Image (cartoon, rainbow, N blue to C red):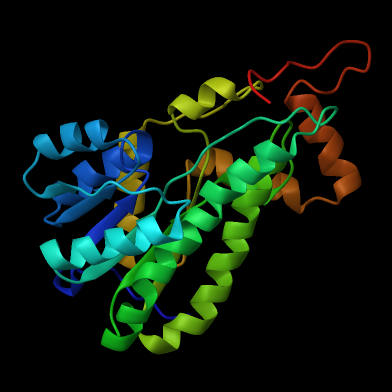
Length: 268
């Protein structure tokens, strides 16, 4: 498996979901390392505040769920900043779903951002990267994609799809000189975590997550997972046969008691 690291010489960095959390921290971290950064999200005001703190960060508002909006954003970035050498597809939302009362709208909204938002980003950059035989695509997934978690049937499905997608892209794009990598973080202190109705061990800050991702794209390997004391244990848990790991997850997350109501998600 080829290592194809992201290099500043290949062009600017484009980060989606950059108005807060990991995305905002990544914009600051990459700018600190010398990258010119295009920061994308729907929240123009938050992007402008972020860009106001560093001349290397440029606000490029767009809606990741809208293909036309993302194509237009990529064109604006190339016009203003030159070629896109690194895209970090980070935008994501978490909408908890109560499995007793499924909500198709929650699934649709989740997939539109978490899955199609990544598709729109990579569609906007890949042909140019392939033609130049340089560039790097990084997808921010989640350790939730390793296996089932309560209230996460929409979110987890979208993140599992990203893990599979990244593997497929890596197989095909290595031969084109385009790097593909993925991160599978555990719990990170972001607004979405307020809607997780279960314990969140080994929580880390967005700044720590940003450093891990920035290090990973510069190394050029395929997967980075962190914090390893949590995510490696989770990988080992999900490697067990399902008759073993499903009851363990149910118990550890508070869904193990049959005689009481499970914690209720804050949204559905």
